[in-house]
Length: 226
Image (cartoon, rainbow, N blue to C red; front, side, top):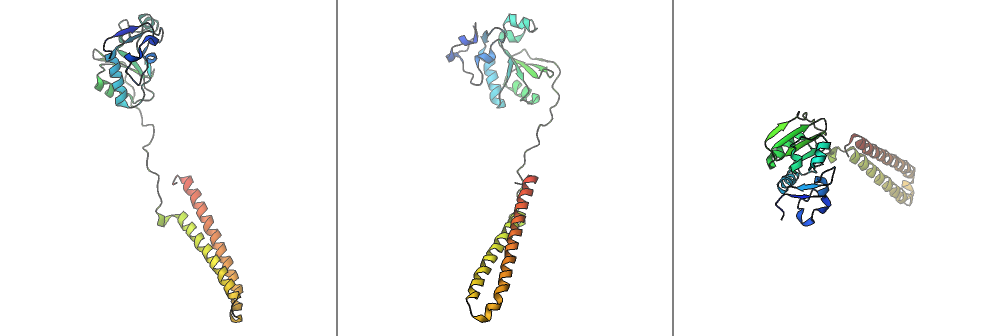
């Protein structure tokens, strides 16, 4: 296992067996201007530990810089980037306060704040910090809550569906009774027309119950209760 600092003319020259940092690639860590790579195992171990602690991707803006590229981008003359021990990390997917705390916990000692550019610099040290800290970030989203659930006894949907079901059964039962009575003795024949009216009454109640159930369901969706 590689534990010594190695310099490669291009990141494609890094042997696969020498790369053990699963959440990063040589291309991410290499110089953006030349493709060169100074592989610093201790720094990369801490970077991987930071990634593991935070549990979310680290977007690396800049890692190793060759001396010529460091001059081209206006880097400090003794920049830790040229040693392969510094990383500039995008803050768009991190809370800067949480990120800084985690970075210090895994062993990064140098912290640079660049809120206008949206990144933080971390390196192995010496211990120091510079720049204006990021403003406290407001909570992006309200805490998630479980959707409200209706109590079945108080459910408008259940009431409407229940009424529709009862009325449908009543209409069917009335129709059966009507057929039975129509075949009975003449003494009960005068009741048959009234049973026909009762059947239509039950049908009307069933339709009203269905309408209530449909309205309640749509209203619940609109209010986010379903």
